[in-house]
Length: 238
Figure: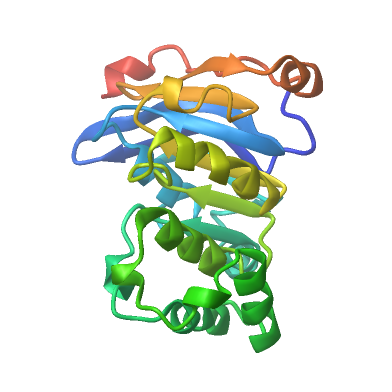
């Protein structure tokens, strides 16, 4: 079964783009804690995260985010108000100061100016608040991105390759912070090795198939989900 605490529930969900399956129809849940999604570039991790962020629709099956069915367009506003999504590239904001960037996102997330200042303080960005994002070192720029993404205190946080520009030491320092930003965090990386030890659970996406690579013992005890399941015959469709 899929545990009640699952922030993401997919039932026979498939994601298809450009004539190929990025995710063959599968049933799974993403529960509270930190889940890693590993896979080489081009495998479909970004498209899958965009689907969870309700920016794309599943090709088949159903998807629930935070208890809301995404196929009902009336639910999308509520879902988007409660999640945070940081794409791999936010270079469009390179000329904005840290404070303006966070404030811009806060406006669209209906968060207050006080919330902007609070997240800047929490992320220790007050000293660089007037600095343009484009001139910041990668770890500080990522912190600014996280601040903007979490200014409204989301229940679900989706991060596409947050450690791609960081060395192992910087990544290790940021992980406890990332874990504290939302009850449920899903983040991606090219390999499972980059995620194992950071996450409560690591999934792998390869050739359209999602499999579990690793899970902490306490995560296995808490999460009574069935194994990820791909319906028989789905391979013939792609």
